[in-house]
Length: 129
Image 1 (cartoon, rainbow, N blue to C red):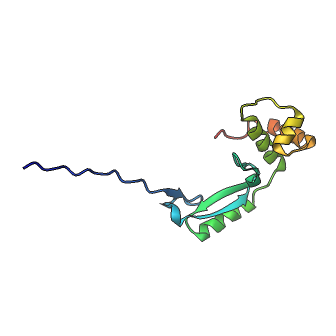
Image 2: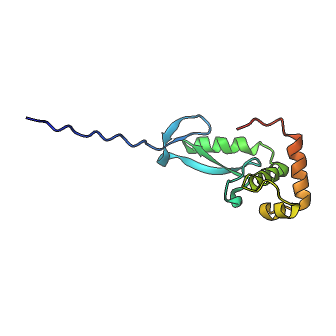
């Protein structure tokens, strides 16, 4: 008699997270998350998250350690402003007037100038992502 082969369904991948402190992987639903101040962090679409980095940990103790690590870092407004400008220029328009740039970033001309100066001074010092 002919036997019908059972179809084997591929297993669905389990969404995993990575602890920002120890590097352990764990199921997504067990993640402990929070935000820390970071002047290098800008959200790709929601500017109200600019200056905040979302961190993930495997437990409350590791989240507290990550927060403590970020508290020791200096928050540099010019770095944040430079990142906002970079986001505004990464769209389809590569050239904007000072007024247009101000409208897209929410920055005033003196802030834009300080951000450009900061960016130019730190151009070769940051590792590329």
